[in-house]
Image 1 (tube, rainbow, N blue to C red):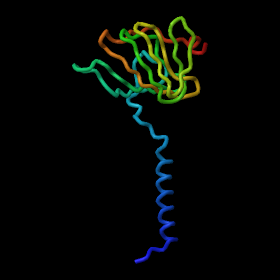
Image 2: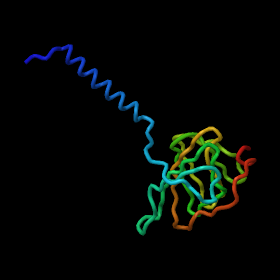
Image 3: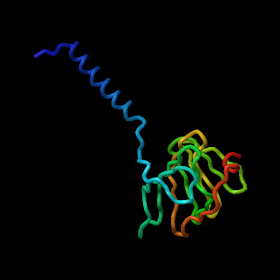
Image 4: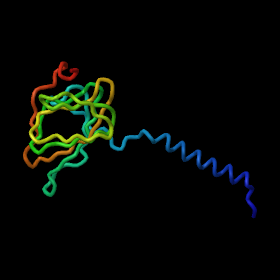
Length: 154
């Protein structure tokens, strides 16, 4: 049985276009869900937490995806074992006490040194997400006062 070359070409193009449309539909899909809305007083604005890895008896490290709506941010805080932030989405800010605020963009990594007071969150016009990694080996995060609007906008 001989297959018509026009039919073969049509079939291949249909498959390629179909695959391309499926790729277009899912190209902006998030790798992880936002998780649960954060309801404690350590954040200003709306933020979500998806705990990706929790500490246990074999590994004291934890990792969580934190997603901030525009303008949302943490309070000032520090981590006795330090913290690593891996930006996965949007534009945000990071500031250590006594230093200038810096902009963080998707793909950047920040290493927060142990016991350094800092804050982080979304810029005014962008949703922002990062994976936060730390350890509870030396104790939990220490939370301090909220970041004022003047500090945030400075």
